[in-house]
Image: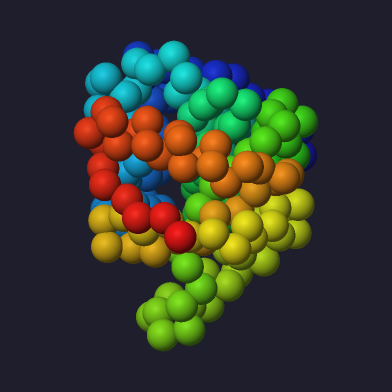
Length: 177
């Protein structure tokens, strides 16, 4: 496996592939906030970085990150289903961790009553195996509760400031705990 990457923008041909991939792997409600890649204003924000990943020239997946002060918010990480389980996700996180010091992300809260609890647990274990830890803080938006995971010690207040910034742009409302 030889994973290459490049940073693209909304005008790239690969951006269309990202939109197709999103429809394949994400529920519709997860594509709305806090980062909406289809929003031209958000997509043109210089703090939004979209990494596309390739193996032998074949598009494997992407990561969308938002840089806020010293934080790097991993808004999306998606890999085509046929390439999932082949260590691409771990390799992508290794690349991101080597380029950014403080990565923060959220995953669906591990609610034992959730219909997809097994998938949530697998996702949690995947991020933990890649060096992320549960911050024990949560955030809720659009009717979903998320656990906040970090790659290193992150001041929770900085994370909240970033989400307050998103809120000020009218991206969405949220509740944090």
